[in-house]
Length: 475
Ligand SMILES: [Zn+2]
Image (cartoon, rainbow, N blue to C red; front, top):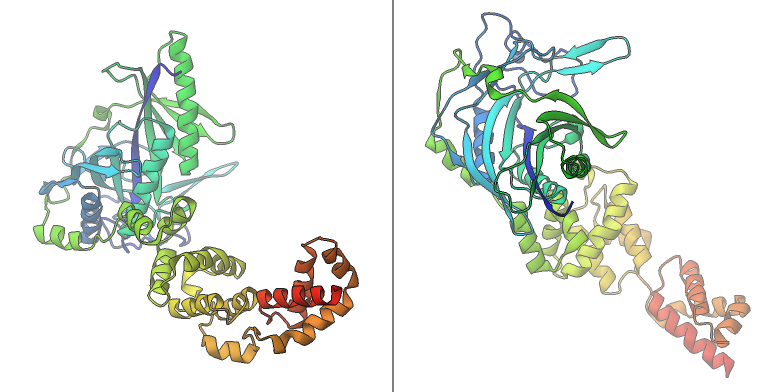
């Protein structure tokens, strides 16, 4: 297998975040009852006229710019003709000869650049729902604006394909062009893959892969296909140009159909829509809406806060969490402590209470205050976590809650001496173990003091006092 080079190209379809469809005013809401967001235009009734949604153009331009594409100043739509039950018009309005964006690229963390061949607008089809005894059709999705993003075939491994998809998805989310929810179908990916002898200039016969619903599925399907094609080539067989479906259940690809050629679709310019002269003003205004992109953020988080690897991945893939961290840093400058608290107790509480980001009410300032109080020794770990759990969904005043809950840490020896004495008196077994050299016995005793003080004791002070008192008693 090592004598072959893998060549992969990816075709990603993403739903643009518009409120209405691309050629009519029907809403694009996802969970409406079947066939309620439809009208004669998206259902392809004869005699209706489509009207192009400017918001879809704006978002498509934004994506093209974020992917470093050239924008064609004049574009037009074409009909892609085919019959399928989820396509009521029997054609899809798409772009063929004149895509909106072309000749772009996406940079990966590895430093490699994958060129983007084209970015074009089109409309989505409906959804077929297959039951045991019948098939149903929901046209709500018909006419939802889609952007097709086609890479050049220069991805060289399934892992690299995974990286490309990850950065592409993050880019689309960062620029707010799509929510990229794969479960809701707002991001879909097809792949084509071929193998060639290392050093060969000519590409091998490519196979198209469909039906991969997750990035992991894409990676697994490509891995399977690399093995399958290598086996065929090693036994001097030939690869046939075909479309194969990924079957996640059996972890195999199976033949779906032999590939159509572009001329099978009988493309021709859509006569019901005017050509679009892309306004320079829209390009300029969309440019200003592209802020920091994922790779830039990665660099900045590494450099400014020393966050790397898995931790970095969490912040890069969760814009809301990254913003929260940066906001908290304005009030407390210890990035390491804040990172630990955000990824630790903060996320624990969010998950425990099953909170969505908008339900998290605690301000970054209050959160920073809790972490600061903890590191200054005003509260111990337990108390700080308790305050966090009490305020995460309320944003009540931190100092007020501390007073009410009496959670200020007791660090002064006079306040702890009674608890320490009791703990020593009640646990002779732990004391003798400690004196015999079992140092972990002290931890048990610290726990007793914590319990007696209802979590308010400063554990370090308690430990020092215990050690001192036991040693004195042992003499
Ligand atoms: Zn409609």
